[in-house]
Amino acid sequence: MYDVVIGDGKYPAKKVSISYRNERFQPGYWYVLQNGEYNYSIKSRIDGYGAANTDGEKTTKEKFPEFYKILSTFRFIN
Image (cartoon, rainbow, N blue to C red):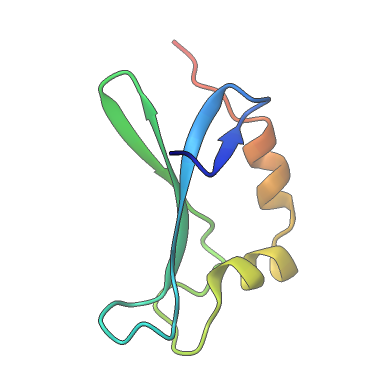
């Protein structure tokens, strides 16, 4: 099951979000989508990856809202 659609509704993607409250893993936030036989991860560098007590999705929305505009225009080229 997919969480979002990226690029004008063309690419279903799964949102991966690891909370800073999870003690087993470093926090992180990204999208994974498939094209053909390959999987791709799309992530903002500004999400605070690996930083203690950081909510990656919230940080991205606050500091880099353009990230979502970029996702909305994403497309694969041949």
